[in-house]
Image (tube, rainbow, N blue to C red; front, side, top):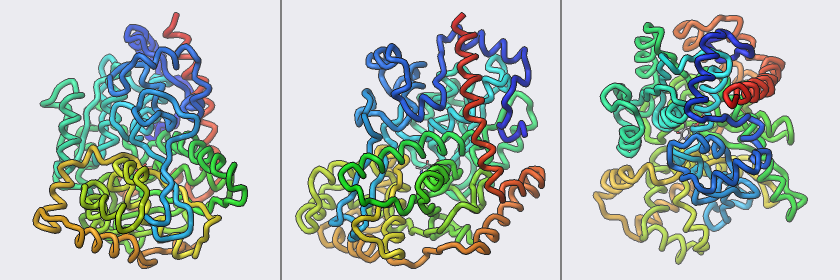
Length: 496
Ligand SMILES: Cc1ncc(COP(=O)(O)O)c(C=O)c1O
């Protein structure tokens, strides 16, 4: 179980004592998961002090910004999580599609700092990570390792990012600014988005040295649990706030592109609360769930070719496959003057919506297309709501915009190409590659995980099998309250 990050008691008292002393010296106090789920619980003096702290700085108080309630500039708090409702002029469907925006999370402009926090902190408060000598290894396709490096640095731990060499240059540039040692703390593995196996191989190699502690987001249940509570509650809040003006509004589906399958855990919360359906999304160029397929794609952040251990597959109701041709080209449409002029002048998309499109990274656009597919497949109407999220915004993909312009149009993008993109990728979005899952489909997809987790990664068959049953997932949820108590006790110790 220790391997899965599921301890609820102090495992090593000496390590614990050293960690308390270290964080005391660094002046760090850690938020509870309950505070991150509902920031109104954060003490007023912390909120006041935060006003003077740059949300992008490695400052301990920024841990209290690892939630969905940051204002657009990242500095203030919002009443309801930031979300963008897309009009029919942009989606072509009657169903209401609302995207919760992740780019005002602190330090990295993406919600993956939440996953990183949720993986490291349970280890710290249980004495399983020794900041005086261990290294925190953060394998990912880009955002989680940045989150991990940021959270490690604030918590005075030594963080190392591992990511494929083909990820966007912006991610590497960010890492170079944040790691303690540029030569050793950024490890680039072969390949790009879908080369998760190569990342694992590197982790297995590093794992032989006991000072390296691998925070594998694909199997750390802290990742699942933080999203269940924090992202789940935030989405529920968005829904409740919309219902004030539209009491008949029904939450029909939650769409989440899966990388580590952390974010999709919010679907379990929404299912518990509202009976909402959960749709997992993947790149059609690498259709692991849909077709046991493989391949390369550019929807950065949704690494695949395997089923993460923390994916509650038996609770997933449908799978949608989206092409990176659509996400690449819509990204250009949304982020160029020509594209925006087309949307405004020819499609009648309001300017205030166009101004917000910069908050959608590739996977956010994929999620929106998945929502359009779901709306079409289920023939949803104006009282049906689909919720989804944008993990990050456009700022991490400036170089990708130039690459896409070159790749698809030799650098020239005009009103005609803009119209082609919108016609093909939005209006022409079909219900192809949308699979509503039967019990047998779910079982088949669940079983796919066996090869990665039991055969290759050494997970006990019993722990693997337990995940078929919802009682198992329900039993995990008690960890959050237990960890919160340990965080409170840890803070009290380190404040002495
Ligand atoms: C941009 C982006 N989108 C989507 C995801 C997938 O989120 P999750 O890992 O929670 O499934 C990630 C994960 O790193 C990401 O970086």
